[in-house]
Length: 117
Length: 112
Image (cartoon, each protein chain N blue to C red):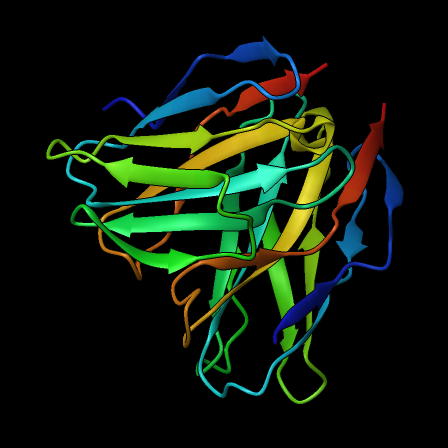
């Protein structure tokens, strides 16, 4: 079974600085998708960025980018020029490709990001 | 376009009772998934429905059931509520079952 591990329960960053959130996963599948979701106090889960495992190029969305290391099964999220609105819980998620849960997401436990003004 | 909507926003129930949670997907989306998020944890997959058929089920007891209607909206039902069922219940919709999922704001269920 696939697992997702986020080893940093909490992180803090100064406004305008850069922070990196870590995520590792375990799978025997060769083709899959990985995601980072943001959950602010409003509870709405918002998709931040996604990475397709067969693509070597790291995904980028404005200030958000990932460092995808397939062999190491590592998928970290880098937030540049941090803003106060980036404060939230961040979840790393793996999308299951095969079996009874096909198409659905396995989440890590999350990292709470605080942004200091 | 409206996003995924869920009702009610909050709900308080007593142990042993039954609850029904509702979800309306984004217009045009044919798949709905349900997740349970216990405080301090990541969401856990409960069910996925696609074109009104169940196509995936997570590791939850039979007290949990769901269905999808012809308009693609969905209901999650939980019978014989336990204290441990207290959680945020998230609904997510996607255009096809394998497309990206977009989440609703959730229903906060408290069981006393």
